Amino acid sequence: VYDPRTLALYDLVVLKLSNPLVWRCPTRRILALYDRHAGASHLDVGVGTGWYLDRCRFPVPAPRVGLMDLNPHTLDAAGARIARYRPERTTVDVLNADPGALSGIAPFASVGLTYLLHCLPGAIPEKARAFDTVIPLLEPGGTLFGATILSEGVPVSAPARALMRVYNAKGVFSNTRDGLDALRAALEARFHEVAVETVGCV
Image (cartoon, rainbow, N blue to C red):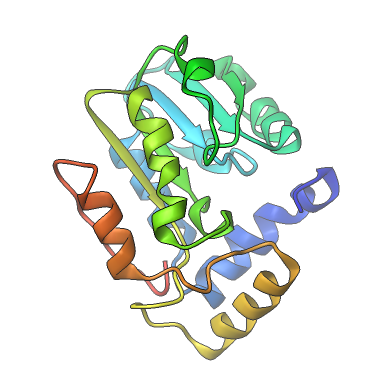
């Protein structure tokens, strides 16, 4: 769904309107994750428009930044927005990635997956293959963080439920079976330390 025309509206529709009004999670709460967890080397997977990378406070003036996505339009948009960091771009399907194709990428101190999982097909156990794809790209002791919109185990308002139905019908979302318990279980099966916080249905 994300082409240059829709990406031009993304920041307004998603970050300024949907996040606070529909999903009940202010965009600043997600930006705070980047301020807290983005490392001196950071890989963003499912890059959107690059808004968070453009606004966050990296711990160093010149971080190493990687962009990973299947969509060349989002890679172009985010890459142009943070051109000052000279981002490394990788085009890959995180659910069906060839490990050999990623073996030449130096690991990162942090990996961000923000608003990616609810767009991936399948239930959480299938979506969790995205974690398996990026774990080898994390430095020892590195941090994976992000956010996703859930439909089960979190408070979902009537407007949120209605918009989810529309997005799932159009194929923008695939989160009708995405639940909090399944997400936590997928993370705990893979990481030593896990913290999950819910804000609205995010």
